[in-house]
Image 1 (cartoon, rainbow, N blue to C red):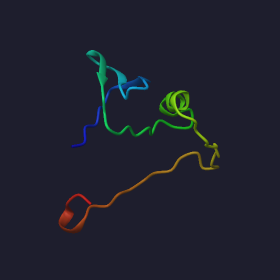
Image 2: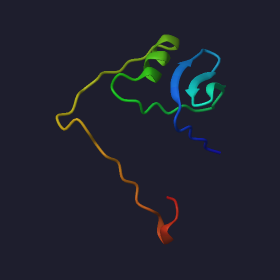
Image 3: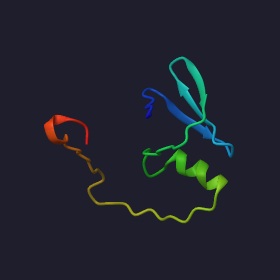
Amino acid sequence: TVRVEFSHKFEAMDGEGRVTLQGPAGKVVTSPSVVFGADGAFSKVREQLGRMVRLDFQRQYIESGYKELTIPPGPGGGFA
């Protein structure tokens, strides 16, 4: 099962796997099995992970500044 939280801002992640989000109704603490951090070059998710585990990464800025990903529908118009 996949759950996407719109209108929520990432606040923190701890070493036990708990993620704190700020939503319209206040703070939400959840324990997801996977976290996707698609929050850009100055990623708060990456920053939090770097405090918990040793990371090796580099930033390389692209000239266009923006890339768009398109995922076409599968056969019969369904999900891929």
